[in-house]
Image (cartoon, rainbow, N blue to C red):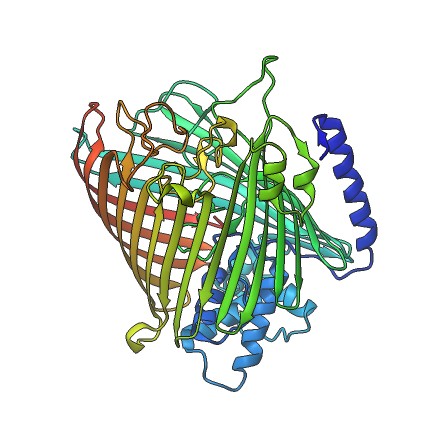
Length: 574
């Protein structure tokens, strides 16, 4: 195997590949960017697949491209034409999504005969209000600004998010009040017939009664670098990429996130738990197969440096194969390796190599993992799903051996539960063994900055989720959620695998039971209501009450906590 440690060599190879991709892509069908992972269309597709309206959906690898999403919606339109497979709420959702993805619908040959009249259109069409709008503002009644000329298309929207948190935890002697404000903008489009582009920038300020650090370049869970000012914190994030479409696959170059797995409340391998990261991604879909390869560039925090005070690079390489076995069964297989101390490794650049074997060949110095997941759809209106993640496994030493780092997730999704239209119910359970995601070399931890790339519960934990949701209309829904969370935290004198940033050491016993250590437990009951005022402008109210036991308190001891929270969120294109 060859190892390239010179960053210039890596850059030259990447640039050469991009030039080749651009040449090959000339004259091909236009490429579309990805649908943001928090868009409600993912839930709509998931629901209709569970209902049996959609088939052949390989939805355990996200995000989808806009073209892929439109293809699913076109299948719904064709299957439901002249029938009664969808209720009135679902028909309204489908019609709006035909409006939302109208460019891709036309590209795929679908009818663009949506009947949606947005509230923005109604305002613009009114004589008095319409005069206040310049012609170029909401010209297509969807995006704030859109420009379409020949083969160039660009769509621009503002981003705004305002959150207010009010809580009264009994572990503090005061009421907690937290404000968070985000603003930015999103731009996406295409140039010619082969290049798509996406840019999303936003910065966020948080302030309130919490204690904030007075130092720059810190990191907090789920975020990259954060600046602390004592009275508040500030952080920003940019997601930006170019996407090319080739004859048999598409290539993305830029910064984004990935979500692999069927879970609703988290994923064991790749999730949106951590902040986005730079990556090169290749994807191909042929017949009933979908192949994905990701070469990502991660960050450590605190920053790990070499003897010359240079930041040591950290990488993740992963590939995944989804297979639509039958209308009632989808399976996914994946591998991933996290490696540091070098930027380039030819064994891992090869997208079809067996990474577990390659990692052994290279000296077992990297953090390799394998996994599998499935979706089972044989029961009407019910989807059963599961995922297995194997970080390390040594069956000869028994299941309690500390080196058996395994996690699994299982769940069920019931659409139109109890034969009540638009009522959905879900149960999901996730469990991680001690030391899952950790590694003896700190730079190879399964994380970006100081947040895990996998499930948010971390190692030596489990989580039970119960959720019921009822949708009154396309714009209004309510949900109730119950979560029971348990975690085995490290003891002061013993490391039992409860911290993702701490691998086994001399204090670790050879055999460990699940949830050994300081067993923390919390139960949370939450209620939420969401209303879409205009397109992508949401008002959300959330209330939750939680009870925790044996958690670490601000005064340095462990004890119980009772906490009630109230959230109010106003978001636009979040």
